[in-house]
Length: 319
Image 1 (cartoon, rainbow, N blue to C red):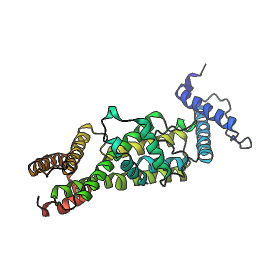
Image 2: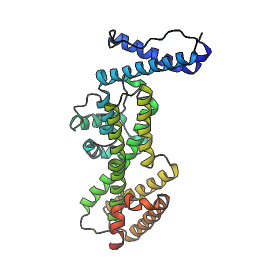
Image 3: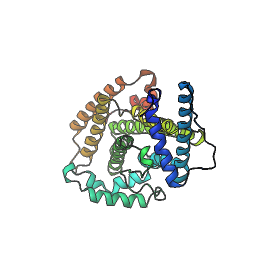
């Protein structure tokens, strides 16, 4: 049974007990350290305060254990390398060697074949030295799984898929441009500018500073486990929000724009002569979708979102 004045602390006490068991079983518990002692008192408020302080003390010890034994800082940094394209050289290689498989309808894609291609790409990239990045499905071991929960890793995967979509469209446009360098379509430039500006905004202006701030706080501050979880969750949520991945209607508009880019490059890669009427139709669709997107963004940040487009759009006529 639990005294009524301790009911608000039941979860914290239970969690602290789990931390103590993990620290004891791992041999990390410092038996020589003088931990706070709790003595019986008729003043329940003092007792609650002492228990809260002890729970925080144990929680900080558990975070130090994760940092020392599981390279927690490196784990958090590697999430950015892998999922948020800080070191995205592997993704370009993967898109190139898996292009045929990625172009297939979903029901015809062979997951095993993609996994083999993925492993080959990772082993030949700058990520090969990160032992815990052996699979695109991130499954942290216990007790790291207490921090990297299934919900959190699902958010990693959502943001990764979002960034990969932009990277895939960018790569397809680049290939089409190399195959049709003699063609001068202003629509091509607008599409390049759009994909580049938004991808650069998400990776450089949003994810990088948020993740660096998170790493600094983990390294320099004595965080409790709850504080660590909150900071990590807030950083991922902020990335999703500022990368337009939380607003469903805005996401649909961006996907429509990217689909227009893919349809355009598919048109140019056909062996027959280019249908200029179809290109003009795609140009009109692109402009309409882009206008809708811009109307949804804050007017004061317009140039920050689409710097290249705003600088050059009016100067280039459609061929």
